[in-house]
Image (cartoon, rainbow, N blue to C red; front, side, top):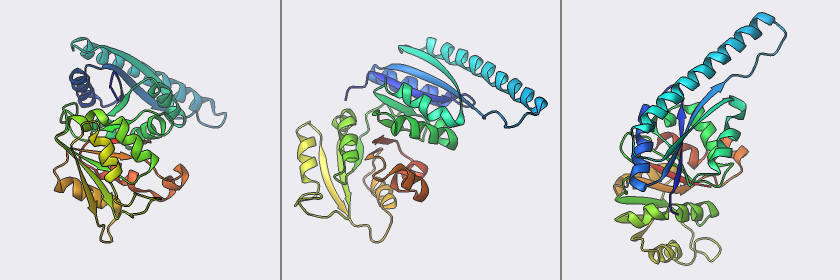
Length: 277
């Protein structure tokens, strides 16, 4: 996948670090940056109490005015950079934010989430529900301040022979090709023709090698630990500076109720995380 358009979701209250990271990323890749400044307001109160309604309307207008001011700041910063850009202002309610984000993610090659947006749990959840699960666009979450645009030296590719893992591998191919080593990591793999093949990891390794990716296959025993714990530990063991994985292998409602590997990786992983669904 060639990255030509990047959508960066910026929370209206805190965005300096995320904007700088998005600029650095787009400069590195020669990509156009769509900076989406988003402000999420509460739904109107239920009832007919006129004073409460007036207060809500006034607060909503203040939030809209603040969004306009912050968007102007973003434009000023981008104008001083060398990237091609556009700035979109989105004022929406919490309940509709994921749909607004999903609509704009359709027209990007990658959705970039910086450390400030990643720390904002409500915004992060809306971005994930919208961009990742309601659009075909992959997502790169960078929980730290370092420039994620530079080619990672070592990448851990979490592999379980699922459609999601396959999409993640294909959509991250530009990063995989540039890396010095890619560790295809399988946790407690089953060797069978209907699962990972007679030699788990061999087929995807061959596929990626034909694309010029330098691969190693690592079959890791969990030893009773959770899969996300094993992946994070192995990423540390191989000094990976990016993890690539498929997102949600189960129905969304089930994942929301019971959590899962994806949720834990999002909340606890300290290195850039490339996700595809």
